[in-house]
Amino acid sequence: MPANRSRSKFLRRGTAVLAALPLLALAACGYGSHSDDTDTAKVAAGSKKIDGLDSVKIGYFGNLTHATALVGREQGLFQKELGATKADYAIFNAGPSEIEALNSGSIDIGWLGPSPAINGYTKSNGKSLKIIGGSASGGVKLVVNPKKIKSLKDVKGKNIATPQLGNTQDVAFLNWVAEQGWKVDAQSGKGDVTVVRTDNKITPDAFKAGSIDGAWVPEPTASKLVAEGGRTILDESTLWPDKKFVITNIIVRQAFLKEHPKAVEAVLKASVEANKWINANSDKAKTAANKQLGIDSGKELPANVLDPAWKSIRFTDDPLAATLNTEAAHAVKAGLLQKPNLKGIYDLTVLNKILKAAGEDPVDAAGLGTS
Image 1 (cartoon, rainbow, N blue to C red):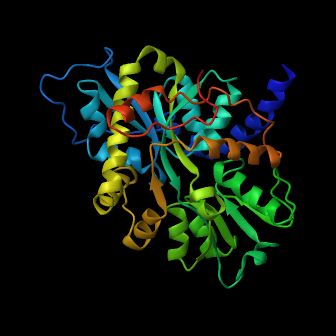
Image 2: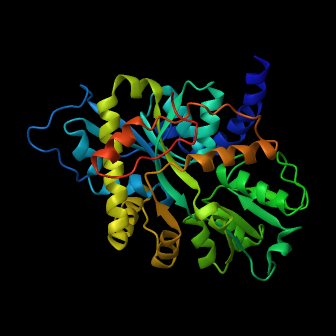
Image 3: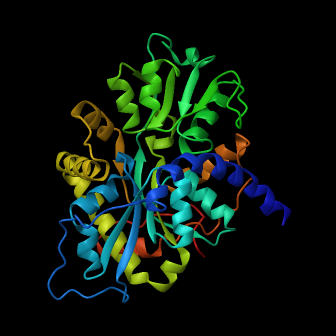
């Protein structure tokens, strides 16, 4: 239908632009970097496979905004809940490659930012994925070169990096620019501010070299820039009601949710346990997340990056659905997305069952849940 073709126009463009570099980097190992069997998590004696599955394939990014997955893995929580069904992991650098992996069946469940989730859902006409839980809020900052930018009004005329065309931070920055009354062509990034789409891995080097004057980026990239002499001039959380906005959700293949609900429940239960432990043991959780980052990437974060980055992220089971709807509206406003139909993108049934059993309040889908 014309509406669907129009809705997917940006998605085709965005996927082509955004997926190229990450997929080249991951070509040797498929859609994501699959870890060796080095986990210390042990299967309890007498445990049985869940839903008859040999494994559940779990995807996440190697950054702190996905710390629920990092901690859940490092603490063995996923394996504990899955019993004799193996928790198999894949680590991604970008949303489009994780969506592709989900659609192909290379992963079953994943931690993912809101914009890729919206794109994946709309591109498939609501058939590919469901958001089944929340994970994190916050952890996004505008960090600038203090010699070139001394106040927010000085951002005009400067080169500011975002991670990818149409990604969550790119949309947020374009919306903020528009609210200042400045004009930028969303596709080219040219205008009153020049938006430079730069992979988070190389943004610190670009900042040091002076090719960008600042960046609107997630943690730990923001704190890496501060460690290089940058200054945080704006924390995105200050732009949202109650300083809360979704940065990471939990998604699942719809077919997997339908065919293996007990496995989905096991992973979600482990996620709830991970967030509870994180919020009750912040310092230990920070260490655990960094340890897993080191295993995944080969290098842990130094304290001057880890500590401030960790403080700016809030971990929550609530998917903060109303803010996802707002983020979609921002993408539409920027001209990056035709108005999407997000009705049904959430299925919080299993999560609310787990929360009820734990004596916690249910979370809300803001009118975007499965009927």
